[in-house]
Every structure is written in C-alpha cells, then in structure tokens.
Length: 404
Ligand code: DWN
Image (cartoon, rainbow, N blue to C red; front, side, top):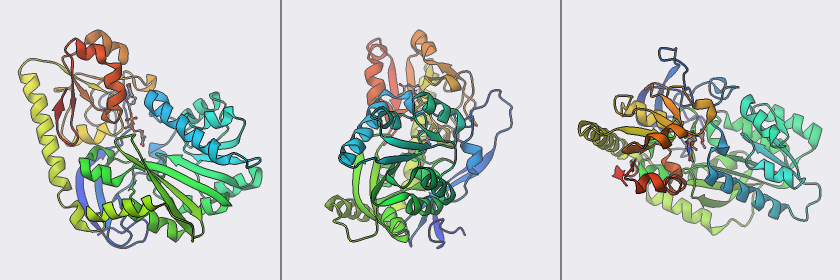
C-alpha cells in the first residue's frame, strides 16, 4: 500500500505500466545502462490528488543534460509570449514589480518580461537550458526552488509580485517545499499561477502518455483547491489552455475570502460529474489505454505488412510511455525526426528507435508518420502541408487511432 504525497492517506492504484526508463533518458549507444523504475499512477480519495506511486530522484531527470527545450515549438513560443503579456498587463501601475518563474527552461516567457525591463528571476536547476535562458537576457538562479532558495531570493531581491511556473509544478515531488517557499517569497497582495496538463483532459482522451517520471502530479481543480488550503492560499481562478493536449492554469492568492471566479466551481462540478473525486472515475481508464495500444500496434503492423515505411515525428518525453508500453520499436518505426539538436543521433529510452534530424524527414518523405508530438498537431499539420499534399499520412492515437 502506498500513501499520498500530499496528505499521507492510503492511495488506490489506477494503472501500472511496469518497468519504464526515464522519459528524457535518450541514450548515445544501444546497450548503454538505462535506469528503470516502476511506473504506476495512484489516486488519493482524501485530497483527490492523482500521482505517481514510485518517483525518480530529481537529479536523475533535471540535470546539465536535460533534453527538452521549450523553444522547439513555435506555437508554444506564442503561448509563452501571451503569458508574459498577461503578467505585464496585470502589473501595470505597480512600481518596481518583481516576477519569479520556477523552471524557466530556456526562457521563452521571461525573455519578454526581461525585454520590458521588469525585475525578474528564473529558477532553473537544469544547467544547460538555464545557460540558454541567460543568452536570452534572462536572469537565472540555477537551483531547485524550495523554502531555502525562497529565503535567499527574498534577501537579495525582496518579495515577488508574481510567482509562476508552466509545466513545472507537476514535476516536483516535494511540492509542499515549493508552497512553503511561495509563502515566504510572495507579497501579501501578489499572485501565483501555474499551468500543467489537466487531469480531466487526460482521463477524457485517455492520453496516458502524459504519465511519465517527470510528471509526479496530475492536477485538477479538486486537488489544487485542497493543496492550496493546506498552505493558506486560495484557488481564485482556473483558465483552460489549449496547449500540450489540454492544460489548466490555476491562479492562487495568499489567505482566503477572495471573490473566486465562478469558473472554479464550474470546472470542479464537471470533475465531480466525471467522478474524479472517487475511484469509480478512473475504473475504465486502464481498459481504454489498453484498447488504444492494441489498436495502434495493429495499425502499424498492418502498414508494415503492406510494405510501407513508418517514421515518428517528435522524440517527445511523453512518447517514452507510449512506445515502451505498446512495445513499438525500430521494427515498426524506422526513426523519429526531431528539431532539437541535442537529441539528434541518439536513441529513444527503452525501445531504442534512432533519432534523426528534421532535414532527414524532409528528404525522406515516408509514406506514414506517427505523430508522437500529437500535442503540437495543429502547428505540425500546418508546417507539413506539402508532405501531406504529396500523399504522406499522419497517424494519431488520442482518443482513438486516426490516419489523416
Ligand atoms: O512537461 C513537460 C513538457 C511541457 O515538455 C516536460 N516534462 C518535458 C516536455 O515534454 P515533451 O518532450 O513530451 O514535450 P513536447 O513539447 O511535446 O515535445 C515535442 C518534441 O517534438 C520536441 O523534442 C521538439 C519536437 N518537435 C519537432 O521536432 N518539430 C516539435 C515541434 C512542434 C516540431 O515542429
């Protein structure tokens, strides 16, 4: 029996994927040692948090060889610029404001804050991406964020008007230390926002590839409201984001008694109508996941049987779960094209599919392309109009396998 990382109550398992390598553990040579852990997701009936049962030490995931760069997607660049604009608008009229972003990656959001001359700090433990942020004129502290780092920041820069994080809060197992840090760092009238993949989207689409080592928590309005209360914060708004397969942005303020936007109750009511506050809401998830894996393997095998070639598009972190659980390797997918220089000529964790440059894909024009970066579907289909015009087809798989 395992216990909730938030409230220590016993948890119920939702699905087990078995032994899984770390999602960004791309290897240089096949045969190289790979760290494997048991990937299981569980649910706490007491505080409603969906979470990984076994976790990987943060240093094994976020280090000087982190493979994911936020700026690889044009769509996300636009999204982060929008986030920066919202902060700039909200801070208008507040003198000498200070913005802190946790996990700023290579700086796609903070570079816009920096360009406006607003005081800011990115807290980023992955040294290689932090260096890139600095090249974008972003001020960075290369550390994990917690109470101690928060106190250091306050001593040097004072308290923050805004503390934010995109695709970061769900990565941190010791989330209590982050919230304790927030209570130290945030001004009384400041606000926090964070956005992460939304549990309701994951359950509704069965998008199980969002489940991997880096994603320790799968947040909902139900769980965030409880977590916030424990740290004397109030969930005051929720805004759905059409990125990364469906994300939710949560806004929190210090204390209680604020006017809470009616959207919060509406989202929580929808979550309850799907029974995400009880084990019944997760009962069919495993069957849906297994159906998708079966259908996808069958589709790929049929295509290969007919003599066509398949390549992958986007060596995503999330595809580690899909490829390993559905047992999709180089016998089905020749290679995966990716635009991250750091990933080229490496092999995917566990299934060892080679990664090739985008130029390879363009020259190759394979008949079928498995869209592993399905969360960037709109952007990629737009970019690959010519490939499709010439007859190339994309295969997607959530909520069901589709060829388009
Ligand atoms: O939370 C996380 C999310 C936000 O980012 C992290 N834990 C790690 C990472 O997850 P991911 O690797 O699954 O994210 P993406 O954004 O789905 O990765 C897209 C991959 O596809 C990148 O390697 C870049 C590549 N790509 C490409 O080759 N051509 C992406 C686009 C849009 C393209 O046109």
